[in-house]
Image (cartoon, rainbow, N blue to C red):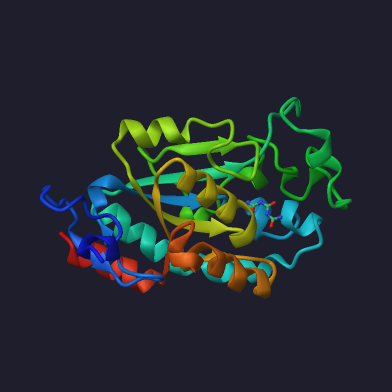
Amino acid sequence: MHLNSRVAGLKPKGERQDMTTVIEAEPYSFGLDPKRAALVIIDMQRDFLEPGGFGESLGNDVSLLRKTIEPTKQLLDAARAVGMTVIHTREGHRADLTDLPQAKKVRGNPTLAIGDMGAMGRILVRGEAGHDIIPELYPIAGEPVIDKPGKGAFYATDLDTILKNRGIAQLIVCGVTTEVCVNTSVREANDRGYDCLVVEDCCGSYFPEFQEMGLKMIKAQGGIFGWVAPSGAVIAALEGGH
Ligand code: TIU
């Protein structure tokens, strides 16, 4: 087997390698080039991580997601320190709900539907307190925020355009929830030709079994959708690679 096929991110043999550091990942090593990579933090919004929001309205225990905050903060700090592109996404809808399919509004028979008034403003509506990113991971100037109406970060957004304009080929993916918006976004990214490394302890699910299987699905079959690694390995690579 060709040597380069065992480390994701390497260019074909003979071409100059930009890769600066190798991350131990599953199903095999990931060659990270921070200049061609973006940290993509999916939907770390108050509506999913705090009581009284959309996540709780669907019957979920939101406290299960909160253990992702500290490792994600550490990874975010490391990415910012090396000047890597950082992109945040938020799931939500226009205030007039014209971009909300009726099927999504009624799905799950929620106690509070999207657009209803909840403890943090109108549920999953742009501009409301609950729709915003949690304070611990709040974007800073220069970090694009992608507002998405669906589960996938590429559907009806300009994410692909922003990534292509910056020459990004690799995505380091964090966020919630593992089996819903993280998996959907990684699958969309994979079909668009991006190499995705999913950071296991920076992803969270309301269901422990979906957390496990959501990560397994990504790395199965030789990395059918991408790679999986712990935040410590990614942070060590970022800190050692400059
Ligand atoms: N319900 C659930 O697990 N997730 C979502 O509705 N959206 C995201 O994952 N962001």
